[in-house]
Image (tube, rainbow, N blue to C red; front, side, top):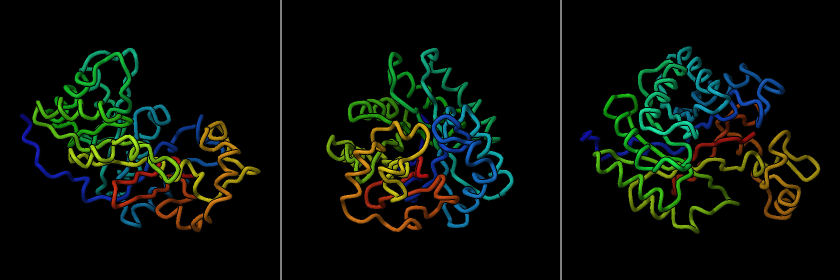
Length: 279
């Protein structure tokens, strides 16, 4: 048994910074219209507004996001809360693969422990229980302070919660898409389940990769790969234009820098908002 405390340290947080854009060239165009200096300014601006949770992943920019975040943290000398994720690639079959991946993430981040380690997706064929065993091992080894999941539905969340409980480890969070135009977590019962289990729901893409910022129109859609995203389709943008006026740009971009790169949004009454892709 790990003897984890009953409290969830995420309960004290209402907002965080998603770091998908930090180093990702394919989807976000890192190195084209923005680069390391821009991302560093976003990091500094976040700390200046007392936003200290940064959520990254081993697959963001093929590890570049973790390396950049680690560099910025070291240079700042300030305490931050770091969350990262394990990706269940098809060649990863054993719980030991999770521990190896975590140690590699720690090397890139320049840390001996992360605050929150999450499974990025519940992809088969490896059972959820296998990965949760690896997560419990990571807690006991002192490699992570807490455990979360991402993109888990109701049944998968219950399984993860139960598997961890058998090892005396709490499931702290489930990170899922949640915005004004994506309310699936409400309709499918996931939000209610998270409240029941004491699992913090972390909302990612709260302004839908910039679509809800008011910046884009059918004539000016998001650039790059986002243009192929269904939520950023011309029909969707046209529909949004006919609805209530958008909030002011500066409100959507609060906490971010350089047009909201890495910006955030939160719904404090429902969960933690980690803005991912809010340019």
